[in-house]
Amino acid sequence: MIKGILASSLALSGFGYTAVADEEVNIYSARKEQLIKPLLETFQKKTGIKVNLVSGSADALLKRLQQEGRNSPADILITTDAGRLHRAKEAGVTQTLVSKKVEMAIPAQYRDIDMQWVGLSLRARPIMYVKGKVNPSELSTYEDLANPKWKGKICIRSSSNIYNQSLVASILATNGMDKTVEWAEGMVSNFAKPPRGGDRDQIKAAAAGQCDIAVANTYYLAGMLRSSDATQVAAAQKVAVFWPNQMNRGTHVNVSGIAVTKASKNKDNAVKLIEFLSSKEAQIFYGDVNGEFSVRKDVEPSDLLKSWGSFKADSINLSKLGEGNRNAVIALDKAGWK
Image 1 (cartoon, rainbow, N blue to C red):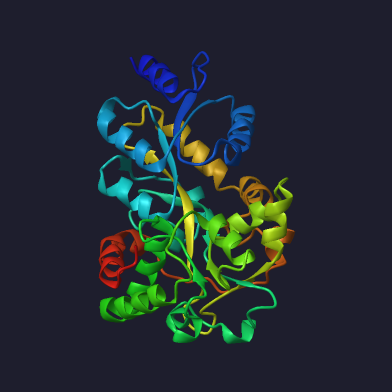
Image 2 (tube, rainbow, N blue to C red):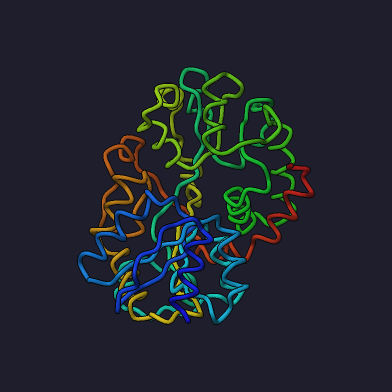
């Protein structure tokens, strides 16, 4: 029955299907295949446990897990942003992960307080500025971006973007609703253009002279610098990274993360895979290939990430980002952030 559902699911997803091995683990992943598949292939070779991967959008995969309920073939959900991981927990499609190896590898702030999910890679969302147009000595904090001195100079995604919602949730946790709404209003006043497009679009807009400052996740910048598209490389080379809030709470960070599904039929194998993905071997991959930071303290950033300098990350427990998502959306709506 389960194998039949999996075959059907894979067919619906447009992915190929091979015979199911005796030992297997089935994954629903919102990450691009090239960012996770090499690690899954290594795990399969090391353990002999067959890995079946279904890729899709984060919202679609969560909805699918809810619709499939206990009959879902998925053992694992991989998605990005603590806010989305929290939604999966609230939807009741995850279960508690029990693994001392994982607890020892991943700091508590990057794990759900109930171990319903854990972070796999760390994503920083700093300020990026156009070299030669902004003196970094003028930059300081996310809060300062609401200063009128930046009027017409800021590019950032829309309020519907989960990365922005989690950033605002982190600001809410420190400053409260009233000050956060006031800050968001100042940000809106300083937009160079209506929010539109992804993080790469904000960096490109800054490079093209449409704004002086972009707020974006660093792995997008890394991807552009490593791109085979010369125009992306040229755009990325025009901006520099500034780490905000170094004198107080630190730069906002988030995670891509993983959870064992409530419906898992291969729980032991799911736990083994999560233990592998949190190992030093796998964590090095995130920096070298994905341009992300490791969640482990004993794994150094790649040379490219080091070139942007070291920084202090916000120490907030990322569970708070999901818990604060609703109020973050309210704050953004009140401020008129489209």
